[in-house]
Image 1 (spheres, helix red, strand yellow):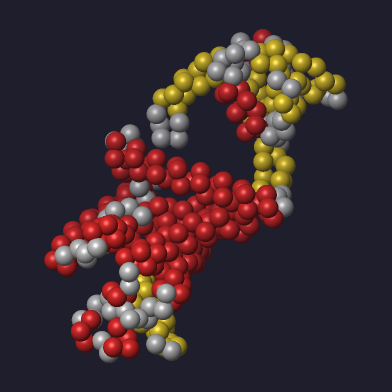
Image 2 (spheres, rainbow, N blue to C red; image 1 turned 120 degrees about the vertical axis):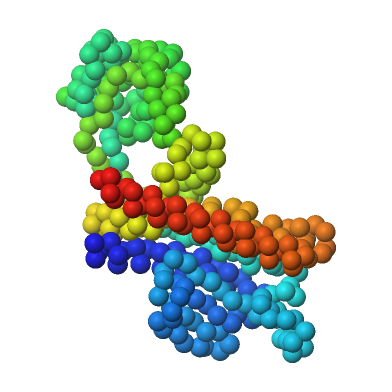
Length: 355
C-alpha cells in the first residue's frame, strides 16, 4: 500500500508538472506575467518565490494551476507597465496557445516516454505457435504446436502481431504460410475461418482465425533513436484514438460508466507497474499522460477545452465572451467535474469491496 501511494504521487506529480509547465512556458514566451506555479491544491507544504513567481507544492496532489497576471484582478487597477503583460490583454490566438500548451505538452511527454521504453527494449511475442485447436484450419493443414511461422504470402514475419494482422487482412481468402519446423521449412495453404469475437469494448465483431494460440516465447526488441521516436509517435496516436473512442463508447452506452476509475485505481495500477520495473511504470505514465491530454481538451468550461471554446469564439467574433456567461458555465463545469470525481471514487471503492 505504501509503495502504491508513493508511486501514484510520483506519477501524478510528474504528469501535473508537465501539464502546468506547458502553460507556464508559453505564457513566459509571450511575456505574460506568472504570479504562481502550483503543484496540488489545498494547504501549501512548501513555497518559494523567485522573481515575481511563487512556486508552491500543496498537500492534495490531484491537480495544479498556473496563475497569470490579470486573470483575476481588475485590469483597471494594474499599472500601465504591467497591463501589457496581463493575460487578458493578449490576443485571442495567444490565449489559445497558452491554454492549449498544457495538454499538448502531455502529448509531447507521452511521445518521449514511449520512446524511452522502446529504446530500452520491449518484450515481443515471437511467431512460434503455442497450441493448435483440433478441427481448425491450421490443424487440417498439418500445422503443429512448436512450429514457427516465418512468412505469410511470401511476406517475412517474426512477431505474433504481424501474424495476426496478416491473417486478419485475408478476409477469409486462402493464404500461403511458410513454416520452420526443427530447421526444415515448408509451405502450407490455409483458408482462415470466420469466428465471432469481441473487441476491447466488449462489442461482438467478425474476425478470421486459423485456430492457433500464442506461445510463451518472447524476444526483447530495441529501437534506435529514430525508430524509438517513431514508435513513441505511433503509440501516442494509437492511445489518443483509443481514449477518444472510449469516451464515445461511454456516451453511446456501449461501455458502462462503472468502468471509469479514479485516483484509487490509478494508485493500484501505479503500484502494480512499479513492482514490475521502471519501464512498465514509464509506459503507464505515458498512457495516462495521453488520457490527461485528451480529457483536458474536452469542451467542459472548467477544463482547458472549455477555455479554448471561449477564446475561439473571441477569435472569430473579435469580442470576449460575456463574463456572466463565463462564470455561469464555469460553475456548471465545476459541478459536473465534482460529480465525476465522486462517481469515480465510488467506482474505486465498489471495485475494492467486490474483490
